[in-house]
Length: 79
Image (tube, rainbow, N blue to C red):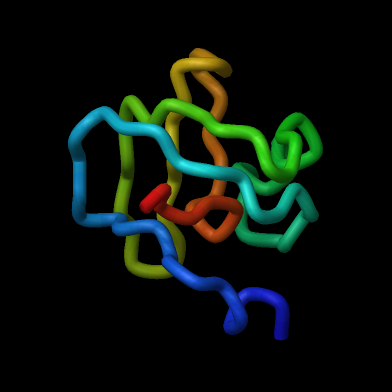
């Protein structure tokens, strides 16, 4: 239910470097990228440097955590 209440989901097709805000750091059981979610702090801003869109999930790469993949559902756009 939490994920449907979000105001502005992350635009996974926008591949420009930008800041997003963390809205969840829970393990959502989507592949290996969710095991890294506890590293995030809810409410903090992070810089997106890469996005990998797959058929079942989307991986997000952050400047603050080089080489570590996160799930896009952990973030939303900053207005």
